[in-house]
Image 1: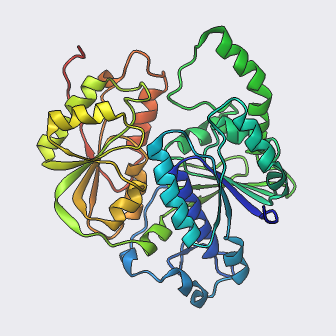
Image 2 (image 1 turned 90 degrees about the vertical axis):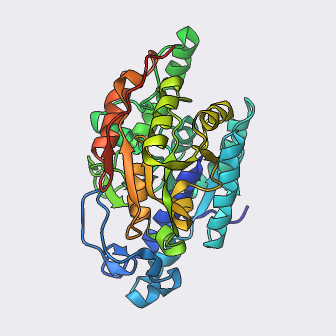
Image 3 (image 1 turned 135 degrees about the vertical axis):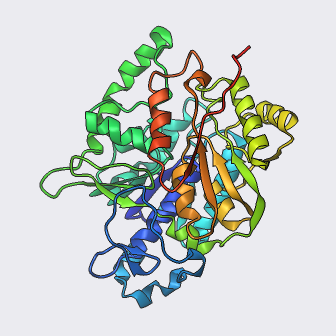
Length: 404
């Protein structure tokens, strides 16, 4: 492999890779006085989660025009990143990741595809292959702080700067848990698993504890920790926040052609065991009827059997996007209204589609939809995702019959 990169990013999903591209673009559009920019125009400081108005980004200055805005050339050079893709095993995610990797190469970034799953020895082989670069990197960017593999890599990090980019709404839980000093656990994960699971947690505890310390900024000018996010989060303990307003996406794609209909956005809440499948089907069918929806954009983790049932019950055209929805919507065509359940897109689409005239609506998840095995955190977390969404239209939860 060529010499170690000063900036090293680890991604495990298409959305994480998209957000690394957004972060690199934001870093490359920093003027000499250090103020962040929005499409070549100095941007005033603002709270996370608040999209900024202004002209449609389809007319924004292209990437190469940034020098004319008085940018610091060293910042643009520093933004070229080596991105290590740690792909999951499911085909949909891998396909989207390959397409996102092609976009990243077009931007001048270096891509390394590193298999870290698929066998007991795969993680250790990948760790050995990456160790030198991890130790040498001055800036390390991670997309999923909850990932055990990423946490293992963090034990090797000596970087001066650690950056966390969005892995969706999980960023909200990451900020909350680190603020409370808790161990990092995904919000939908339920405890249990018996003695073997408890033994694994005990063995893994030192790695998890080291990862938590890495996410704590070092005092006295040591390691810096930045969160790059579209979520409504407040940094703490010396962390800094850079707002992800999807400037790269808006500069590269669109504006989209709008259709007269409504598009629905799917969720993997059924697959993660949070929402009952029958009640979810009923809610989708009701929303499609009430809003005249014709298309259903499936989440990459939605099961094929569930999607077939949805299509048969609703008549919706099931679309399996080959890129993250923010890019699909920005390229178009897209409905004048997009309806989603509580998920990442109710925070990201208002940024990506700013100035296009598209309305983003969110439908609440009724507590009765939750399964008996749903995490105790599920109800409050989903409500928080909806309550904190900006520039979206709120829809009431759809009443559903008792699950059979």
